[in-house]
Amino acid sequence: SVVQTPGLPNLTITHTDNSVIVSWPATGSYTLQQNANLTTAGGWVTSGYPITTADGTNSITISPPKGNLFFRLQAP
Image (cartoon, rainbow, N blue to C red; front, side, top):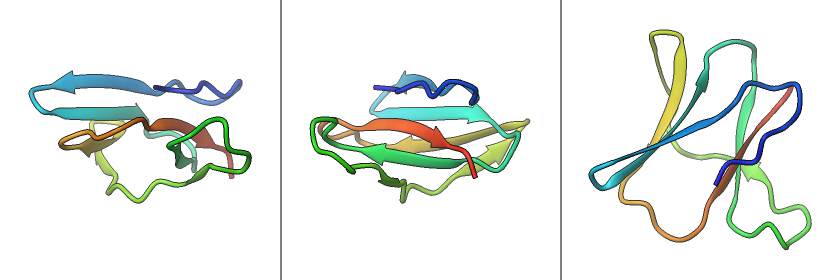
């Protein structure tokens, strides 16, 4: 799932074969954060997935995806 933070670029999720790709525009200095459980206060942490940048887009690939993960961008 994606949580949209007002004023920040949109995250996009794409499912291909046995992978999930989370991508966003490569503009600004945003930090990708993830959370496995939205009911726990303070559960957001910096994502540890390697970020790939190509054609003006940042992305991470999760292969294979396991369990629930929520993502958001955090402004500097």
